[in-house]
Length: 243
Image (cartoon, rainbow, N blue to C red; front, side, top):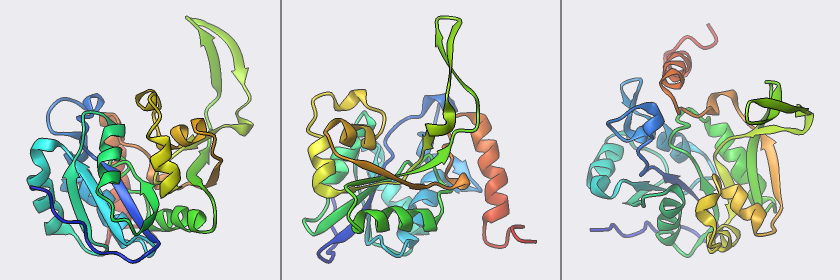
């Protein structure tokens, strides 16, 4: 049974977390968002930081359809800050985003979309993205400069070395005016695009950037989880950061 949407004020910023995927590159078993980091699921870390952001008034998680009650109970045990709602997600990331969008109260004007696989994205980054949308941008993404040399290849032959000075690695949360994101998700080719900013670009809207954060890296493979554990041990309350 679905839960009613919390009441929110006009112009509210809501954060969506599509967390229904399996994440097979991290290995079989538990869905990626529920893999443990510092003894609790990555999803808990991601939601905790979103809910703690000053500008976020609602967090909506799209969970695996057969684990909605479990995820709701899990987050309730660790939750604080902005109100939380859990809905059933879909078999693809974009279907989960659409399910969460459909659950938002009418008063929500700005939507952030965040990957549960970026569990350590700092609160300051969340607020920076939300602030940029509220200041008038249609869509905002956090980015970092690309530090590796990038080659374009055809088969096993290098075609060219790409100038990386204009390249950026994209992170989440990504922020949008709600109407812009909803319009973009009407695109029949929605499943071919890997992030929501790509959908908005294809719909003809401008996407602007803000500085990303090193901690907002994506946990995709087992080695990423090892790195996340090391970072978490440094930044957690009582950790060694600043010592």
